[in-house]
Every structure is written in C-alpha cells, then in structure tokens.
Length: 231
Image (tube, rainbow, N blue to C red):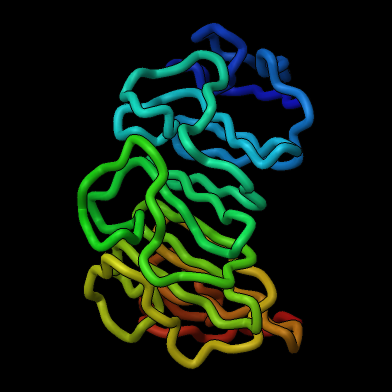
C-alpha cells in the first residue's frame, strides 16, 4: 500500500480529498505497489502487474489517463503494460517497459518526452530510438535513461547543460552524455543530473549556481565532472 502526506491542493496525496495532511494517509484503492514517483503536484505508483496509476494535477496530461482532469484518487495510465521503473518530473512522467523501451507522457514543451516533438501527450508515447534502458531520471524539463552497459542518454531542456552533451541546445530525442561510461545509477534535480559510476565515484553536469555539481565552484557544466572528495 502507499501512504502520503504534505500538500494536497490538487489531490496529489490520493486520499480523495484536497486537504493538506501533516501525517501519512492511505492512498485510496492501491495495493500490490512496488515503486512510487512524485512530481511537483502529481504522484504515480507502479504495481506488481506492471500497470501504473497516477493522481493529482493533470493540466498537461501527466497522469496519462487521456484527460487533463485533476484526480483525487489513482487512475490507470492508458495503454501502459509491463512497466518496470517509473519517474516523475515537474509535469511529466516516464516508465521503462519490459523490453527496455521508455514511454513518457505529460508536459513536452522542452522535448522532455523524447518523441521528437514539443506537443504535450495525455497518454504514453515511445521515446525515439531508445532501447536497453534499465533506469530513468526526470528533472523539471529533462529526462535521462541509464542503458544496460553503463551509457546514459538524455533529452529535453538543456539551457544549463543538464543533458551533458557539451551544448546548451534543447534536444527532442535522446543524445549520449559525453565521456560517461560505466554508470550504475542516475538521478536528476531541477536543472542538473548526476550518475554513479562503476568505480564508486559520482559525476554531475548542468546548473551549478548553488554548487549542486559538487566540484567546488559555481560554474555550470556542459559535460560530466567528478564530485570532489566523494568515494
């Protein structure tokens, strides 16, 4: 089961209300959940069956139920089966499916759905040309996938270099993160991205105005740099 707490103005806690909760409340009607993901104002759950259910804000279709209606309780993502991994960004959601493909839905104003368009999607669409994904990470406007073998591919917003391809150009389809190999896990913040690499170090790229890259300065990084003193 899933329990949530905090802000609930658009139903993102999934208890059928819009009342903020200071302690955990049960999400209505959810059982056999194996993973959860939280965006800015929406939440999703991965079920044992491979289905995904989402609730909360739906202004960009980020709940994936082919509507833009906010939901106070979980709704099934339309046409999605065999999911193995889920993430939620600011207003978009993505899932790895059983064959290693990635499907995304919701806000696509920066190309963060990876389908070679900037059109919002109310139901899942396949990320163009991407297979072999084992994990994914989503920031405000960027999405990244860890590929079997340790490469990382990213797409979407790139104003601060958060795609790691050495540019600040928006990408509507996946591009390889430059010079990165042997990655075993990935994570994304609002405008920066990080990877754990096989030799037990962390490399990050993107916005660094608050030192979030960890390389002892505040310069944005367009390609991965090692976090200082971490092993």
